[in-house]
Image (cartoon, rainbow, N blue to C red):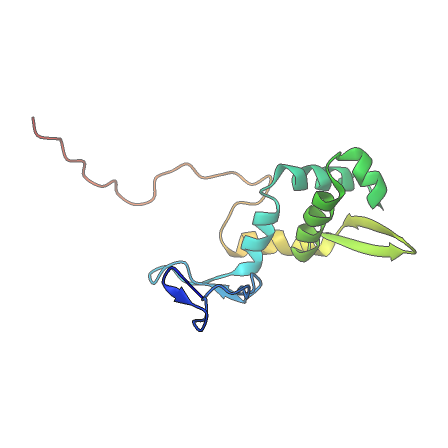
Length: 145
């Protein structure tokens, strides 16, 4: 059976095997140095409003997943997905208690996040953000009339 440019004997390059998002380095350009992916994974985990809300609930203290469901009313499969992303990013921990799972913030994970941000040269919470210009400004060319 042939569909499009691929035949049944061809190996589709994206045949369900995806590269691990937890590889050690990501190369974004031949000019830009590779950066540790852990920082990008942690920041990506923070880039979703549902996950930020979950972290806000957990910042008041650990709780059972059923209580999280009451605090953040989303479908249970979505709640599980978002909690898994936060766990894999090292920002929350899970403890099984019989058929229940308790979640809490991972202090070591957040300490690692702040350390990685500082190492990357990013301003930490509470630090001033520099608004000065670095180097000389490029010449602007006036458009011809």
